[in-house]
Image (cartoon, rainbow, N blue to C red; front, side):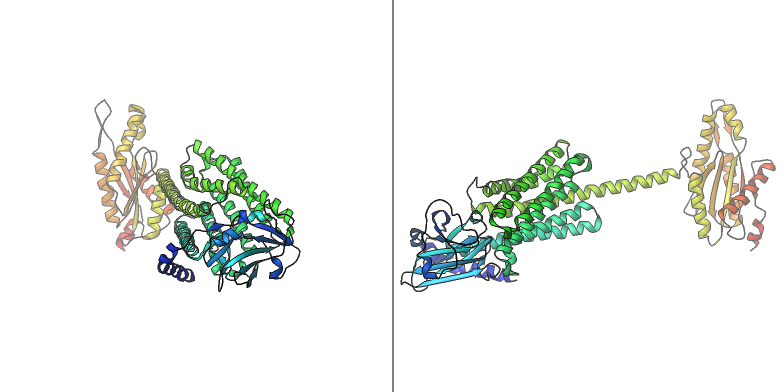
Length: 569
């Protein structure tokens, strides 16, 4: 809420002050390269700061552990309006002072300590002094830093007119807020996807988004709206930690996200190892209290680890692209702007190219683009995995179905039929459940005379006949050889009538085996006990009835001996 209020006030001030801003030289002035410097062993009074022996040209040295004083060029001060701000890159130090000498001879001494910056910070990664002329114009200015870790980390020291400062703050707040909104939305979206598919790459994407969001809020100084006491050395340390965590999370996400067959296992391990190395380097670089020499070496080592991680990332990306990885194509497109900006910033960190604000602003835009595109990639991968899961489920269901289906007749095999029959017996029915066992008469003679192909045609024909008689309350199956089963709900009279109907229909089938029309018959045993016994007992009763039907001359129906009792009941 406070961010929104401040942003609104900035916008109002900009609109109301627009005419005046156009009349002033509103361009910031870079001061660092033109500043003279001196080193003092102790904190001097403001009037003694002017009397230090300032040296111009070259680079400061010997300031570690002491006060480094930087003198602003008088010509730069003459070009500034009455109200301006001094902006310094967020850096590591013990305390900072701005001593200004005014045209009326008055001297102002503004100061703060690291960890007690209060309002001495600005969005965009800056520490700030409000250098107002008050009663008289500023004619000389001196910036003092106690126990500065490295002069090289102060890439920017600039004087910014008030109107230009307000416009810059509006731009930074808008850019950083938009970035934070995009990343937060991606986190919510990833959480939504995770409810449907609890996959490891979604957790790692959420970790990466969280680390990127934390880094962006810390590096831009937006986090100081909540914890202003972090401004200064702890703010820089927090930037290093979150940057290292973001690098590690990026490698973990990529190693999990790229398809298994698109990236060699050794490359994945090497990629993750560079992520851990980058995090370790960032933590080591944050231990600046171990001394200036250590801090300088650790900063270089951290930059080298990040460069090595970038190289490993590119190698893995190229290898995955060469194998046709769809995820790698998304990754390449998403990371291209970020890598381009990152390379430029890396060159800047090694002082191979000069600093420019667009490098930092572009990082937010590139990161937001990256988050959006990788969220789309996650969605694409989610849909692909969901399709794979649905296909696997369908295949599993089909394999399960095929495991219960007789390949020759198309009806259930013994396994499937017994499972269905046991379920129907356990469930019972209003009119009871009974079992019909069918056996083709003289089936061996058909095989012996006409061949096994002819026997298969008979079995398939009877299977189709039984399938046509199947409904929601009936199950049919081939139990083995020439034996078939029908499990059905109904009274004993209904079951016997069904059996007689099936017997007549089978007897009416005619098969042409090339030597005239051949007809077959079947014997059927019916079991419909007056209670619901286990299926095994029901099967024994039906089998005994079938045996009696065959013994009585075949092509007939016989009921189990206990059937009349249930019918009477």
